[in-house]
Length: 155
Image (cartoon, rainbow, N blue to C red):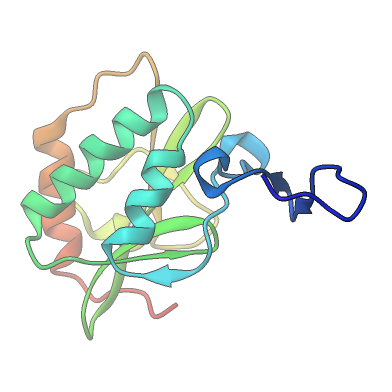
């Protein structure tokens, strides 16, 4: 542990101690604060930092997305994992809330069947997954495949 000139623990931002002791900062609703970055590593860091049951769900969702779209591109932007196709934009994102994980399909109104959660934006649809919900993984994988074939969002 780092100490200051008076021998007291030195504060390093929001955390003290070594990197091994560091716990990710959780924002409102338990959403992990992960720096904007591209690639699988920041997405895996986000998933690992998801609290409780949400981390297991995040791993399952990430695995289904990779199976459905083997060359998927990943990033963490605005403290949320994004999934897309290189040169075509982003087709979905994940976000933690207190009681659920939200999957946003950016062209969700074009999916069949249409995901259930409405959005303020015209084309976006949500799938909100609560701890007690049983995820229809086949339907989720089908939505991911469909979404990956549509023009993505440029964010």
